[in-house]
Image (cartoon, rainbow, N blue to C red; front, side, top):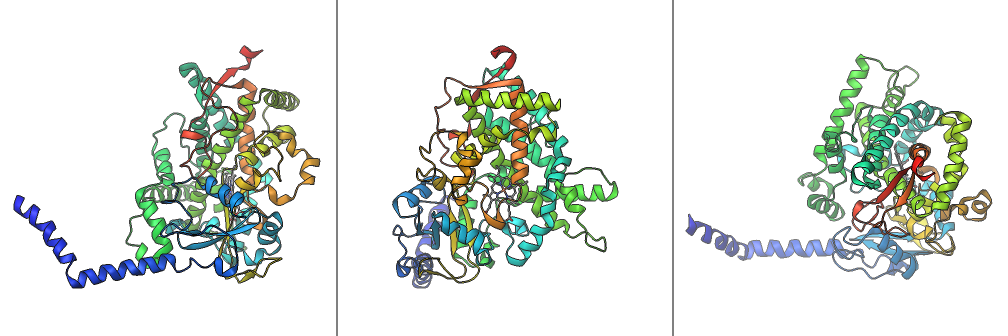
Length: 511
Ligand code: HEM
């Protein structure tokens, strides 16, 4: 047995170094090298400035996400002309990076017909029917079908679901504070937004406050985990033809199967037992054509629900975390918010749907939070036809990716003086009026803007108002001073270490 163990590797090695396998290996390496570098003169030949690319990462400095996205963007924006435009490479893929607000307006609004698509790279096969991944006419059709589900009247129907989850949030925050003397506010908001999106998109209770290890929470975290096979797949997508990818394991598949099953079972159950629920799932089930047939298939509803979940859970938790942090570290701003929310609550008698819409200063606070800490540091479009960049003779062939960085643009002192200072007054109506609309992009821009902007802001406001009604937020001795240091590994902007300790002091004790 031992002899075999020693001789087998030697036999394999000597086979590998025999002429035929060796030639195959050399040819394969040459092919990979050629595939990975063949585009490297793409920007130079078009006279577009930008950093020189290196094999195999292009302008990433190592495997994807080894350097935080927001750092790469800031580097492109400040050091390579990205505040106007520059070209860089994601592995071998050429990407135009645009920071000039007029160009952004052209790409996302005026010339939208050239840029109707997002890239679907990295999105699992089963989810390619989701709005965010759909292209051209199919996207347009689905967007029109889904838009009514996000109207203010539909939002009003979801108010109670959101309120119920908010009650859990307040209860558990106070209990945690009693038990531990501080609260990891990032963790609390992640549970709240998970429960919210589970009840609003899937029509189920995920109970993440009672059980953080619930199947729902576990599978959700599998969707977001950056794993070895996830990175291999992402890299392979840029080099290998699609059919080959089928043979690579997909680490998200188990979680997708779980969510598919949840949605299918809920649809089946509701078909047999009609409900008065007004969640997104029901709204999608109720979308019918003139003959009364459901427009969206179960597969499409599942893809939309899972993508609502992916797009809506961590983003809103990020917004709430940085908003709470900014209030705790700016007591005078928090006091103003409390005065405003107290007044609206006493006028309406409770945290009603209408009360939430009478808090303009809280609106400004959330807008300023999204300016300084945009959850998606980068958004993307793909040219669907050849396009000449306005004011230049640079021709982008169809298929070229264009990226914009809300993070870099919103921290540029030319757009926002003293950009690291948290100042909600930047969002007074007259201040907004003075700025170019395309220097504020946390939800994107143009017809492909986030479909759920209103819903996200609504659930964030309800949570903050409920908390601030009961308590005042304060920094602990370990809370870092502003601006908050950022996590280097997260895809969605998060506080360093994905934790943020705060004190939540009952207002009865603060006077
Ligand atoms: C603070 C929270 C959120 C932020 C900052 C955010 C941000 C974004 C951004 C930047 C985009 C891309 C826009 C573009 O390309 O111009 C987007 C698209 C999208 N978001 Fe959100 N989002 C948030 C919450 C949500 C929630 C709660 C949901 C679902 C309930 C959601 C669903 C979507 C969908 C479906 C799209 C694709 C729209 C399309 O392609 O037509 N988002 N979001």
